[in-house]
Length: 294
Image (cartoon, rainbow, N blue to C red; front, side, top):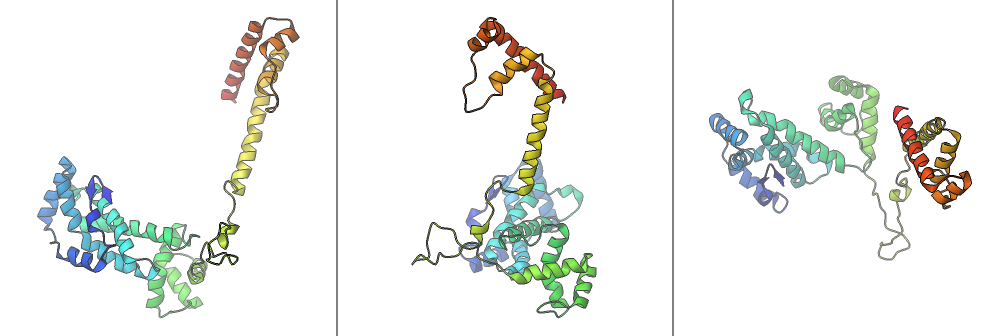
């Protein structure tokens, strides 16, 4: 894990979370004066040792924040890893001249990285895509507990939550439904295989749309194709009949068939091959200019 050349890979919580937590709790906190000095050294001189000390002294903050998200079924060690990335981003962007302590500034970046990690991993089909849905996703559980709603919320409770988070009651009920749905494995063992392994896809993954099969993209491509064809037709209309015929024969014929050579067209029009080449070059230039102006 690196940021601005700062490496903390040897402090990974994945190997032994308990030992990691004990270590970060032993790292001394910084006084405001020391924090200011270190931050200025890093900001003005790029002192990585100063940045390292700033990060180390705030690792306990990441651990504390990670405990707030233990209810999403993800490993706390992984949450801490992501939070540490956010902490390093905060140190990189921290401006000590603004009169704000690093702990306050870093909190946003730590939570942002954890939020993104949770949303990426909690379900394959995203449960929170808009700003209002994200707010619901990360606050619905705690608000339900505060209202005593251990299972599904009542209409009155949904209304209270909606008012608290400044969203609609329908959005609260929809998020409640999504969260209650749980995760479904994307791939399921093939029943025809003794060991559950098979090259044949099974489960929801088998129903996923093929690549580049988004209807919106297909419609957009078709529309763009029709517009391009119309522009080319209009550009060709600016040419004289012979120039248009030569350009069409040379460049707009069937891709599966070999087009006529310069000598073939020279014989057809009773001119030299060089003259055909000149007409072709001039026609291409006119068409290109017309397309640019279209």
